Image 1 (cartoon, rainbow, N blue to C red):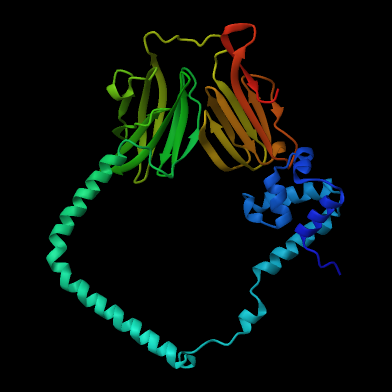
Image 2: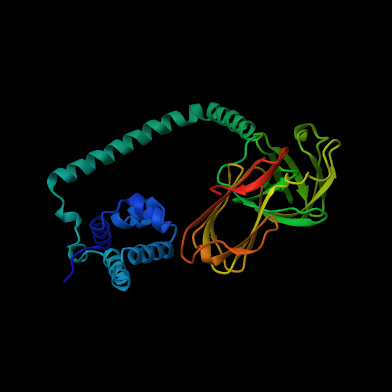
Length: 366
């Protein structure tokens, strides 16, 4: 009977072929960290079990191993590790009477210490309650003022495109904001809270750190304009119409308005943003980075379409290349990669070799 585990079989097969982890990663397009994770059986490195199975199958096939046998061995190991050991299930339950004399003395001492501490706390509580309340109020006010100019942590920003002469709905929740481009400026919009039927929305222009907050209720219109002092760097007006407000979310309709005076209505040829549209035929894990800022990260369902736009650099990582088709800046629609393979694409803006006043969009590595 084979007593070897999955990781040991993979590692020994690789070493028998005189291959390094780096060699395998280069030939299979599987990231080195995932190869190491398979050989050490650290499956927590994978975003989901589907990815672990997919990479295991590809790695085993590359090493010319029995793929079906390894997959069955993997499933058996997972089932075995998920079951409680027999000795844990059959171990007699400890009763209070089985405690030895030293343990009883320790428990009694601990109980007396807790009672003493509680009595001391009660004796000082009344005398310090007023001053403590005043101190707490002051601290909470200071915290609110400090955080009012920052984007709250824990918000995942989803990239959306706002085309000319069109209105795009944004759904904002406590953990989900929207990132979009305005004349090649990366902007973010999110909701900070809802009070008395009004949503407190935040708006940020990258790379600035300050956030402009405004309140809006259902049916109200707000114009985010470069004429507002806090938004002086904005290159054009943005019209925001609030369609719905709930206890923890808001739905707004966003439209690009007038260009700022001195800003060209149309970008010169070659200076258009990096624009990519992804069409998902199957579920897949994704990561998007737009101009150095993390966009969406997680599992995308089959049938979804993602519109991405960046000024200088767009990074796309997809867990299953065969599940996604891509259109990049109007080019022909293509399949992103091979089925079951992790695919990473990086598009950058670079100087036009034939015109120093222009720039072009290329893929890193071309």
